[in-house]
Image (cartoon, rainbow, N blue to C red; front, side, top):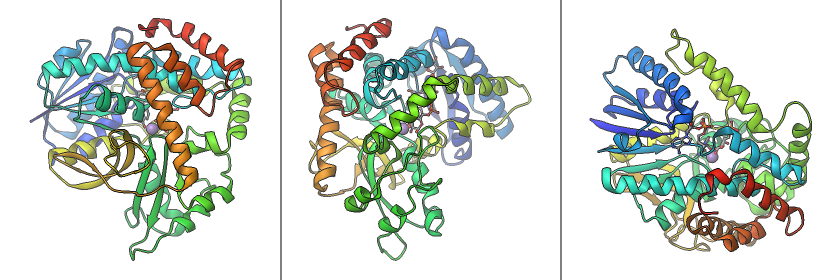
Amino acid sequence: GIKIATIGGGSSYTPELMEGFIKRYQELPIREIWLVDVEEGKEKLSIIGGLTKRMWKAAGYPVEIHTTLNRQEALKDADFVTTQFRVGFLDARIKDERIPLLHGMLGQETNGAGGIFKALRTIPVMEGIVEDMRRLCPNAWLINFTNPSGIITEAVIRRMGWKRCIGLCNVPVISMMSEPGLIGKKPGELNYRFAGLNHFHWHRVFDESGKEVTGRILEHINEKNGGTPVNIYHAPFPMDILRSMKAIPCGYHRYYIAQKEMLAHSLEEFHTERGTRAEQMKETERELFALYRNPELSKKPEQLSRRGGAYYSDAACECINAIYNDKKIPMVVSTENNGAIPCLPSDCIVEVSAVISAAGAWPMVWGEMSGAMRGQLQLMKAMEECVIQAAMYGDPGALKEAFMLNPLIENGGEGDKVLKELLIAHEKYLPRF
Ligand code: NAD
Ligand code: G6P
Ligand code: MN
């Protein structure tokens, strides 16, 4: 049987992960699941532990569920380690969002200055996890969901040298589920090719006869079911640019391509009682945990779909399934480039369509990127590299370089203030600064 260790087990997403494993139990014979959290997450972990046990019991499968604050105990002899933790909890995300907004810049979980600081807090913890894994489960696969997922995965594979790691995101899953309906097709009928970086990729689509339908889908991209997750405001994409790029952008491109509109919307929520997305999610989380506590509940409640990460278990569980059963199926993952996007370093991490088998992820070639896409990608990858350099070596120069490169941060002036204030706000979680 398989041993799974989930770091950040107290996450409200865990019931979704469990649902994914339960659905696949016949193919994926799990023996034990260890949910790991930290002292501050103890209460959430115990509520999630209870619900998890009820879910498996209702399914009728003899899986052992353990909850623990001892990471080593959970990692010992694990086959798959999944990571879904949030260093500093939602309160840290609130600061990532509010501080840049106070200075007129976008505050967002994975983009702009907030996203940079989420990586700075997360990477040192990830180094500890990888160190533990070297000793305790040297053959395990690390399936990373922790954001910023692409940057964290790059740090793990390229800088820490842990090659058995795959980064995941639910955004491609949402696109593939919602877009076919825009042109009268059903999910599964179309062929998808993705390439770019996590939260910064594009895709092209072909129908069953091989005919490209990218252009047809693009014409509907601004509609309600255009493939954008619920956490992102649907500012309209400027169609002239998309038609010229001939590729479908993921929803996160809105922060760059419609920067002013996105910022205006965030500021509007920030200045009303709605508050930032993290503040809204604190409330949603309270409601979810009130449901999870109910001893009658033994399945994932519908309300979890209000979180932007809904459906992520389709990625996580299917990825583990594909590795374990050597399925050789296409999935969109963060993995080593290896030439799939020739304008980026071959050893950097990209988010691409890849074949998943017992040997891990093998990327499919996208080929040349047109000029505008190439320029954006190279800038963003360089920015990511600076963030990782800063996080791993406590390098303040690299951090300033990342701020300089990031298109959502002002250079000098208010940008410098945001940097200073975020360093102070997150001091407790930045051991190297
Ligand atoms: P959350 O705030 O509920 O945190 C999850 C758990 O992590 C909490 O129970 C917390 O106590 C615990 N934790 C904090 N520090 C820890 C540490 N050092 N070790 C172990 N556990 C620790 O977060 P969430 O909203 O459930 O999101 C979890 C993570 O998944 C975040 O990093 C988020 O950005 C990410 N996420 C990724 C995607 C994606 O597409 N890749 C989608 C949604 C969420
Ligand atoms: C999805 C993304 C995640 C992101 C999340 C935010 O869009 O793929 O990476 O962090 O939603 O959701 P939330 O509900 O926490 O704002
Ligand atoms: Mn994501």
